[in-house]
Length: 335
Image (cartoon, rainbow, N blue to C red; front, side, top):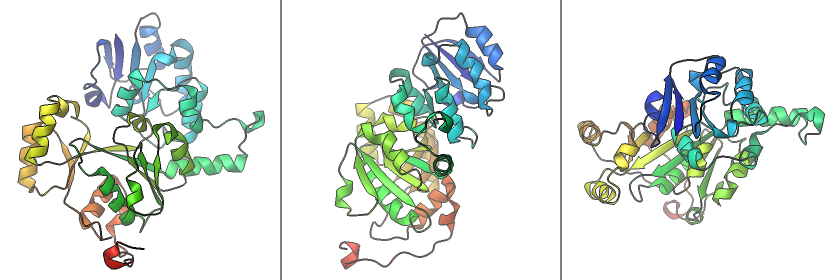
């Protein structure tokens, strides 16, 4: 049986498909949590970090690590500048807290696949006074790079909803204003695009690859079939093609799929629905649509709808187009 301690992310965590023996809601001191659960048997304790008073001060969590079995604790971080700071993450690891994530899908993965030190070692900044391989300058540089890098993962809900091609188009368009890298996991579709800074890796290489390219502004990830990436992603975008045939196929194969995807960031891709149609879609499916993206021209570097989508995600530079690059070859097919 499991324990939930929730606050800001209560609704999102309510959809975890787990048995809960006890749940606390609100803000609590670490002492209150320890006193409640120190002699309480549980399999996993999922903590919404916003439920811990003064959580942005990492030392607050030190007593928690000393009094509870942190191997059973999963920490859902809020993505604030404080909790994404490399020093904060490194301190968590030093306390033995390895199971932390920025999103609910990461929580779901960690319930059955807890991290070992090897899984989070790339975030651990060893003390330079005790033989670390980092110099002080390198440590500062690594910290700055990690903080500025956004890892955005795209996953298809309906079959072939277009994550791979969308990432290719998005990379071309975003690189007008940002340093962008794209990776795909356990696939080799990127080779057909013949584009720089697009890499095909295995699931076992995720952590090292993200660390390697953390000096980039944005890492776009085709994460289909790889729940591991959810632990590292800043954002996970779920693509759904809203055609009747694709939806009916999806529901025939998995009747509970819509229920499981509530409270996720749903984007209707290759979508020609009107605003009223989208409203009707939300009512009928129970899903909240974050955005819709129409069919895009993969030969163009000027897709306004895609710029608007990334502005909504927080990449404001896309709001002022600097003009597409000169096309190479016939219709941009050849370099």
